[in-house]
Length: 304
Image 1 (cartoon, rainbow, N blue to C red):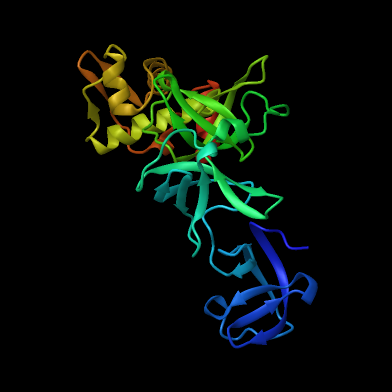
Image 2: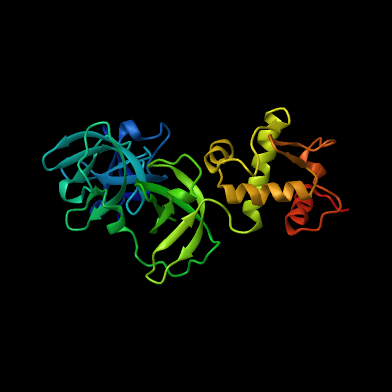
């Protein structure tokens, strides 16, 4: 049975002047000649994407669409009508976004995240930008600290809504996010909290010492790139710290404290600098016994 809006592995049944028919007669689908490999012949098996043409007939293509049924992706609006919009998803026939499935009005050139859906009555693939309404509401199985794949689909003063693992939705709070994010960005994130009502809070920083390690690396990277000194310290305003290091003041002080204890940096009233004798982060301190230091030793193969 053909899976409309998805990839199908099909057998070439016969060749005609304008292409190849795949699948037995009762369930056949045309692969137009312009999409067929030069050496394709009857009996071969080929993977194709199947959707419907302007007359609602199944048609196959070897082109790769931006999104398949059940998936989420960033697409661009080609054209609009009072009944909906037409989206560029990389195929000859545009993806239709019905007006009833619009989260908000769109215009040609706009980019937005949509989910590809299948109307089972007509076998037509359509899009919806009502992402939260079409996400799986089931969030069981997630726990704080779990690594997840994120796709940002909405931004507000509060933060960024993201699709989690192509499945459900969660929130990245703006006051806890220190990276430049925009709708359509894909990120690796972590579960921060699963609320009693099932809603999920997200973070881009790995909980625990994994976060400290990455923040410490960022501080060292900037120090090395700046000749060993940066005019910013644990006494600096939060906005300055965020602008320079893309982290909160709390995270900065936590990471800086570890570096200072491990004698990798010196802290002065006018900023921070690499400690005297520091040559490279593989030096990561012989004697320190903090969990962070032990993680640094393991990372760089330091056994002493």
